[in-house]
Amino acid sequence: METFSHVEQPDLELLEKGYSLKGNWKKHFFKNQNPLVLELGCGMGEYSVGLAEKFSNKNFLGIDIKGARMWQGANSVLEKGLKNVGFLRIRIDWIEKCFAKNEVDEIWITFPDPQLKKRRETKRLTHPNFLTRYANILKKSSPIHLKTDSQFLHGFTLGIIAGEKYILEDSTHDLYGSPVVREHMEIKTHYEQIYLDKGMSITYLRFRLQ
Ligand SMILES: C[S@@+](CC[C@H](N)C(=O)[O-])C[C@H]1O[C@@H](n2cnc3c(N)ncnc32)[C@H](O)[C@@H]1O
Image (cartoon, rainbow, N blue to C red; front, side, top):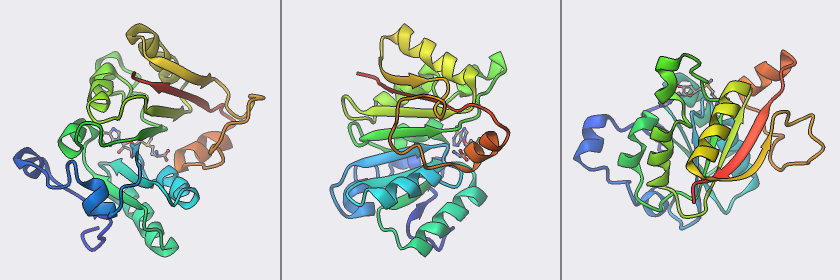
């Protein structure tokens, strides 16, 4: 991982001191001014890589704490010769230390752990604790996409969106059974493929914080 120039692995101590890429991802990491899209809990980063192949005019950054999965995604980026996708190995809890206000243009959350136990509620990546952090780095009116096999997490997130008066733009309990054709759903992550092979429905929703 340390040999990859498109992978960043800052530790908390460095982030606390002040991270040089905060506010500078476009200029110093991607070396352009194109929009910045994050994939949270990216695993191997299938969405980051898949979208980067489609949109050469956007920058994609996969974020996860697990290095072995990230290495696979980072390696595939080298093999494909993509310049508009990178990886950031951090706890998502530290995201405001890595990005400045208004620095991020879009967020994808792909098959996050649903954290079913009540005492783990605050670990859900769509818990208000996390949404507040995202609000501090996202540009106004930016979309957040949630794709998950967990009907529970889908419902939990719908409840948060309604309660906080966020703007729900799209929602389905059965993405591939729905007559509505949605873009970019042909990209399948590792976990999505496992759930599809088991015959489970996949849910999707898109919302804005303001
Ligand atoms: C079920 S996996 C999904 C991986 C990938 N998106 C997929 O669909 O194949 C959830 C991922 O979220 C990551 N994750 C969960 N909470 C996290 C956090 N607070 N900070 C960083 N990564 C986190 C885990 O390390 C794991 O790789």
